[in-house]
Image 1 (cartoon, rainbow, N blue to C red):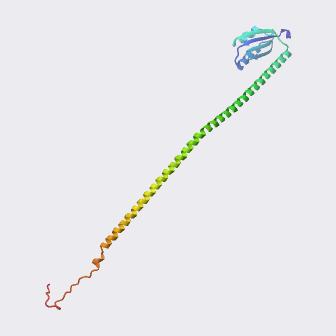
Image 2 (image 1 turned 90 degrees about the vertical axis):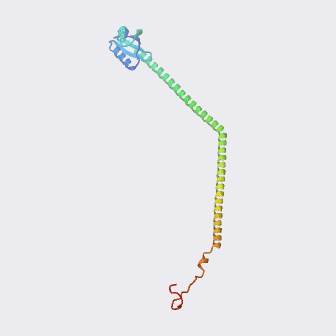
Image 3 (image 1 turned 45 degrees about the vertical axis):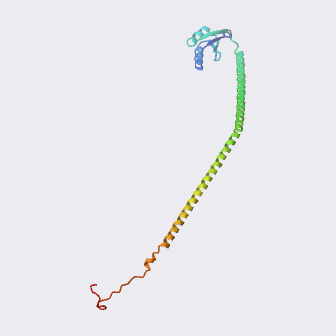
Amino acid sequence: MSLFFLQKIVLKILIHDNIEKQKAMKAVSRLSGLESLAIDMKEKKLTVVGDVDPVEIVSKLRKSWHTEILTVGPAKEPEKKKEDEKKEEKKGDKKEDEKKKEEKKEDEEKEENKDDNKKEDEKNKEDENKKKEPEKKKEDEKKEEKKDDNKKDDKKEDDQKKKEDENKKKLESEQIAELLKMYKNYNNNYNPYYYTTQQPQYYHVYSAEENPNSCVIC
């Protein structure tokens, strides 16, 4: 088959994923006279090179997908086509590199913004802390004053308690002294030995032999 009969057919085909892409390529690849086959998913274009009837291609694909013929013309030389494909690949690689550079630049800018925001937040916190310092100092002073007042109150309570204890002890001492005084006075007025030290009275009893005049019965 000479190159004179080869033609390039470009079709519009509505496919959505790689599975449909493989199915479409499989359906077209069964046709006779096919030299090359390519599908651009982004542009939704199917490019067929070979001695193939465009109507036959469309009838095959329309069973599953909406298909339209865009262009039909002579096929380019394979070498030129390869060069064009290489150029397209280089362009694609260049675009990807540029895209990566832009993404990297955006990431760097985001990091810088994060650092700036972080610094700004730290500065705001410092300012807030500085503003709060006088208030905090006043609160601390109030707390210290309150502590001092509490200490004074505690001291007063302790002193009062000590005075009460001293008065209580003094009162107890006075009561004990009063009791001792009363006891001494009682002892001075009452002598239990007065009754025990008196001499006992003795009565002499005479027998009938000693005194015949005495009454025996008496």
